[in-house]
Amino acid sequence: SAPPRAKLATAAQAARQMTSQYGLAYMAAKNAVALASMLITLAALRTAKSATAALIARLGVSSAAGELAGRAALAVTIHYALFPAVCLTAAALGPRLHNATQRRLGERRP
Image 1 (cartoon, rainbow, N blue to C red):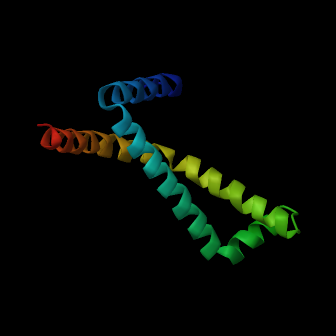
Image 2 (spheres, rainbow, N blue to C red):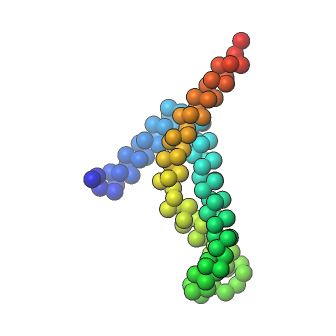
Image 3 (tube, helix red, strand yellow):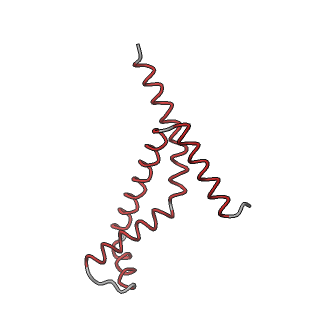
């Protein structure tokens, strides 16, 4: 298995290739999937409010603003943990979105 730094370089190279090959379609897919991931994470944390509150209280935070900041920080942490899945999903959706856009543009041309 490649060392972590080599894997990161390979992933970055793959992302650059996807961006250059599929352009805006890949970026749109990546951003949409990332936003959905973040919203799902926030909704899950809101649903599990008692567990989140217990975890945040254990960290010594007692104010409502602190609790909200703690939930946001936890959501961001979970979101970053899910980021590889976001990238893989975007890599699958980007080419499809690109092809669909090209087909639609081709249909509109005289």
